[in-house]
Each structure stands twice: as C-alpha cells, then as structure tokens.
Amino acid sequence: MSRELPSTQRGLRTRRALIDAARTVFERTGYLDSRLIDITVEAQCSAGTFYTYFASKEEIFAAVMELAREDMMHPGMPHTPKGADPAEVIAASNRAYLEAYRRNAKLMGLLEQVASIDPEFRVLRLERADAFVRRNARSIEKLQKAGLADANLDPLLTSRALSGMISRLAFGYFVSRGGEDGAAGVTFDGLLDTVNRLWINTLQFSLRQN
Image 1 (tube, rainbow, N blue to C red):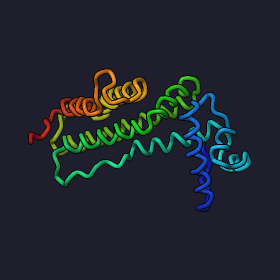
Image 2 (cartoon, rainbow, N blue to C red):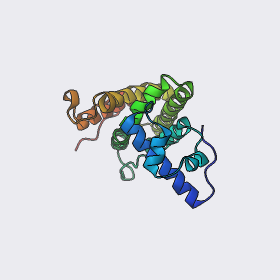
Image 3 (cartoon, one colour):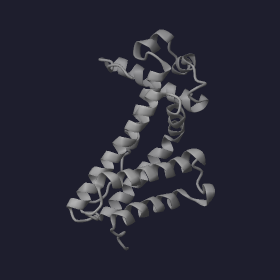
Image 4 (tube, helix red, strand yellow):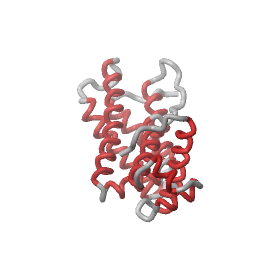
C-alpha cells in the first residue's frame, strides 16, 4: 500500500509528522469518519504536502498500522539476565507485549473494524497475525532444542493456538472493555499472570520459585 520512503531527513520528518497526525485523528474520530482535511489540519500542512507522501486515507492508515506493528513486535522487552529461567523470559516478553497492546488498543480496534469491510486490510491483519505466530514458533523451537520445552509439540501449531488465544484475550481486555484495571474483575497483573501460565503450562516447564 505504501510507496518508497523519502530520501531526505526533512522528507522523513514530514512523513512521520503526517503519520502521527493521522494516528491522532483516527484514534479521536475513528477510521470511517476521518477525512484527509482533518489529518492535514492536525499536521498543519497543505493537501499538496499530504499527496507528496501518501495517495489516500487507506495508504496513511496502513502506515500508521505498520508503526503500531513495529511497536508490538519490538516493544522494548525489559532486560533479563543471561541464563535466566526461560519462564522469566516468557513473563518479561508477555508483559512487554501486553503493555504494547495497551498503547495501541484503539488502533487494534480500528483495524478489526476496517478489516471487516476492506479486503486489503483483511490481508494486512492476517499478515500481521502470521508474523507474531512465526516469531513465537521460532522461540518455542529454540526452547525445544535446548531441552526446556515439550519436544512433542508442533512449534508452529502451538504458537498459532497460543498466539491466537492471547491476542483475543488482549483484544477483549484492552479494546472491548477499555483496558481499565479491574475491568470485569480482572487486573492487568491478573491478565498477565494468566497469560504466563497458559504459555508455561502448555510448554511444560515451571515458574522458578523464589
């Protein structure tokens, strides 16, 4: 959906400013009700400047979602010491993922809506989900090769099951219920604990006891 990146630093800054403005507008107004003029006003630029970098509302929404995807794929996981218990690494990774999901919850809700009516965004949503599945499958396979996880599990299928389940849990908590701590009787830490146990129990190793 998107064209080549600008070749100058100024162009990159202008493009990023448009993306940031579009995110603000989409989160405030929703995708369907947002207009290009709303984005240019928010970015304090002209329509001509917008069309220098993006051809349409669809294209800039795809760019907004790509930045959100990068944030969620590489959320800045807290440092874990070398040789840490794999359960600790999984717990840190899950915390980083859920915190990133919370940061991007409004966009996740919009993507779900847009994907239901636009075939291109349906493909984008599926590709995004598949990227998470394959990354997690590689992690499972590494644990199996190290003798730390159940070797009888199919890494890709296991990742597909766990990733899908946890993605829907996160959607229900942060999007459907607004992500308020204690929503439906569940705190963020309670959600994280459940997610950790789902991963740990499925892969069949235990949390390190303090």
